[in-house]
Image (cartoon, rainbow, N blue to C red; front, top):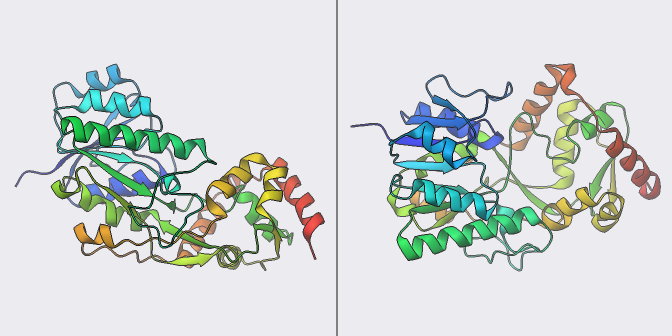
Length: 329
């Protein structure tokens, strides 16, 4: 039996790197177009690396020649222009085209939980999410009108050892080590789903080349649901410091820092719980097995392995100090 021929556009990101490793482990003939490998997430040695700009259609065509693929995955398509370029490039040369959308495209705030794939797509707060929705609309239209073999995958909050789930990356962990309070939005009890990137890969790789996924959409998340206070305490335990939490309303945070606020009001401030039944209907063995407590230890170990990684955002740190002063006690 010949190997599944798969092309990744991008492959060194948080999610794509784990999927690239698992794809190769499963015997997939993987090619990756990338501008360069990150030191944090190198591509597997067995992958065929094509150095170039995956967002340049002419360069992609030159790199690929006349090659065809059983599946093409675009990890770095963010706008309808990117999606249309992919349709034009891979029409007739891909058995499946996988678009990586986002669970932040779902109705925000959600009218019903858990989130299922038929939940409406609407996010008035984040332009990123609206662009992903526009990409989905374009691809579904191409599927309906010409049979373009699109599959849509919506990750939720997926992390690896390099990605702290709290705003500011190392900033919050550094505050914990210094004995300073950390800011958690709302009252800390809203529910959130964190998915380790290796767990995501377990659900994703079996979708490649899967004919029953074409024209359809799937989200891939963990079933491990935590409050934001629990997430913060897990990170504090991994850092080896107490979790001195100060709760601040999301709207107040948005007033202090519009970018941080947009990520809350358009996503994290709302409880998000997902039903993965649809994914399991095509990947029956899927189960996320890595609890965040383990993931938190991996995060702290990664930062501790190189002190140069422990860079705090001075601007955000000062904003947190002001918010703590206003709301502590």
